Image (cartoon, rainbow, N blue to C red; front, side, top):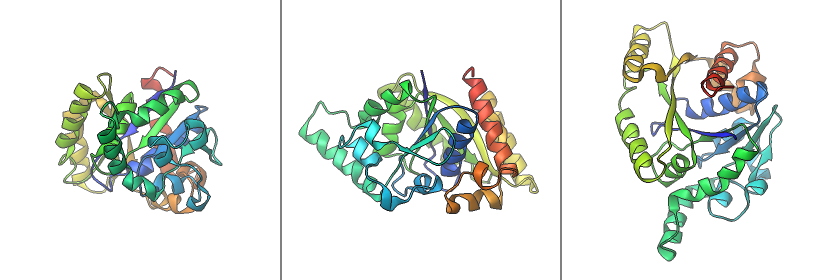
Length: 261
């Protein structure tokens, strides 16, 4: 049975989409069959794995609003064992549409739409990775309902812990009302510039707060990592010898070890 992991942080610019793409591709390279779900209307995870938005026929918007089946929404990528459900700007209106569907049908579960479809993915994929939008709205609620666990990417900067309490509160609310089995898979430290004392202090602060939930792997701040998505490639394909490739492969191995694989 496969596992669904959502990468969540309402702050933008913390490396969430970069980590979604590269964790998914690295798991694929390690012989796991992986589905990457782009749940961000900006669609950066979609273009980051080489999907041209002009070619998209069905997307997460179509899936979440019951306009297509899971099978029709899945697109293969050029990368080993990696498939994607792409996102288009249509997804920006999904919140309002789901609210309207709820008004018409009071039994309708606005936050359970994604789960309804992704539960089937567990029979096909070893891992389903959801790239969430940088907000805590209805799309993220759908991800928290569908997921078995969450990875929280945290940037190694001064305001790192700011907003984390709000996110943890949202996760606790989701556990109470939407998904009692939801767990924190891990906390991922990103964009570390180890030339600065501040970055290293933040690492210690996060580790003292989250303890063993923090991954040993820390993602460094690298130009090659930020370049790769503009070429439609995960770092493992863009620069196989880079420190970024090594870091995300190590992260993928940690994820697999924590899940007994």
